[in-house]
Amino acid sequence: MSDFSCEVYRSFEELAPVAGEWDEFVERAGGDIFGTYDWLRTWWEFYGEGRQLEVALVRRGGRLAGILPFFRETKWLGVLPLRVVRLVGCDHSVTSANVVIEEGFETEVAEAWAAKRQEDWDAIVLSPLPGYAKRTQETAKAFEAALTPAAVRYQANYGPHTVFELAGTFEEFLEKLPKNEKANYRRDLRLLKERHEVRTLLRTGPEEAAEAFERFVPLHQGVWEGKGRLGHFGDWPNGLEYHRKLVERMSGKGRAAIVELTADGKVVACEYCFRLGKFLVDFLTARDESEEYKRHGTGRISLLEFVRYAIGQGWTRIDSLRGRYEYKVRLGGTMLSLKRITVVRRTARARLAMAAFSAAAWVLHTAYYKIWFARAARRLGVARPLWKVWIRSRF
View 1 (cartoon, rainbow, N blue to C red):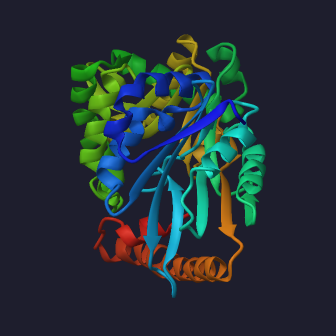
View 2 (cartoon, rainbow, N blue to C red):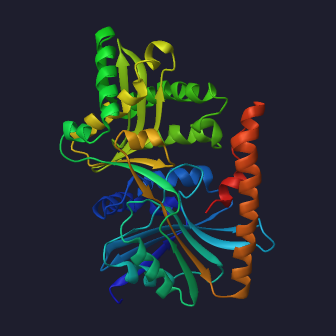
C-alpha cells in the first residue's frame, strides 16, 4: 500500500492538466468512451447541479492505477435524507457508467480511496455498470473490505444490455444470423441498390460530424413523433444541447461520428456513434419513415452496413446500450446484463434512510413512469420530458 496514493479533485478544471493521461489510462485498462475525461466533464456541466464532485485518482508509484469518478448528493425522496456517493454519468441517459481500475489492483485502489473518503455518507452506489465491465465481483469485494463495517450487495442481473461482438469477416458475422433475417437483408439491399445509388459514409471531424448530427436529429425525432413520443432528445432534459456539446468535443478527437446510409445522395438511415480504441457505441439510430424507403427495411440495412464497416475498420465490439430490443438480437446482438454494486453503512440511520428511499423510489417509478409516462401520457397525447426527480431516483 505504500506505493499507492490517492488525490481527490472537486472540479474538472483541476483535472484538465491530466486529461491526456486520464484517457490514455482508460483505453489501456480496457475502459469505454463513458469513462473518458471529456465525456464525464460534459455530463457534469449539464447534470451536476446540486451535486458535489469528488473524482479520485489513485496512483501506484506515480502512475495511474484507478479512476473513481464519484460525486455526492443528498436525496430527500424518503423519510430521511439519504447521503449517497454515485458515479458521474450514472443518469440522464441510456448509457452505463463505470470505475476504471488496473486489473489486479482493485483492493489497493479501494483502500487508497477509503483512506481519503469523508465519513458523512449512507450509501455508495456503483451503477449501471456495463455487462462487459471487467472484474466487477472483485471490485465489490474490494470495496466491502475497504469500507468495513458496511453491507455490500452485488447484483449481476440489473437489467438488459445489448452488444455486438465482432470477429472475423462480415460474411462470417452474417452467416450466424437467422436464415430469414439474412435473406431479408440481402433482398432489401439488392432492391434498394436496383432503384438507387446506395452508399455508406462515415462523417467524422468537427465540422462534418456537427453537420451530420443536425441532419440526424430531425430524422430520429421524426420516427418517435410519429408514435406520439418525444424521442431521445425530447425525453431527456437538455438532451439536444448536451449531445451537441458531446459531438463538438468528441469529434475534435476523432471519437464522435455519424454513419449515414444514403440513396442517391439522400440520407435515409444513420447510426449516431462514438468510439474509443476498438470499441464502438451505437448511441441512437434514425431512418426515413417514408414508404419509399421503409419498405426496403432501411433500418435493418443501416445497422448491418454499420457492422460491415466496423469489421472492416478492425473494431471488435459495438455497445448498443441499455434496454432489450428484439430486432437487435435477431441481427446478431448479444444480451448481457448490467451490474450494480451497492454499499450501505452498517448503522441504523443509513439502513433506514436507504430502505425509505428505495420504497419511495419504487412508488414513484410505478406511478409516474410505468403508469403515466409510458402509457397514459402517450395515449392522451400529452408527452412531456422525463421528470428530474424520477431520473435522479433511479439507481
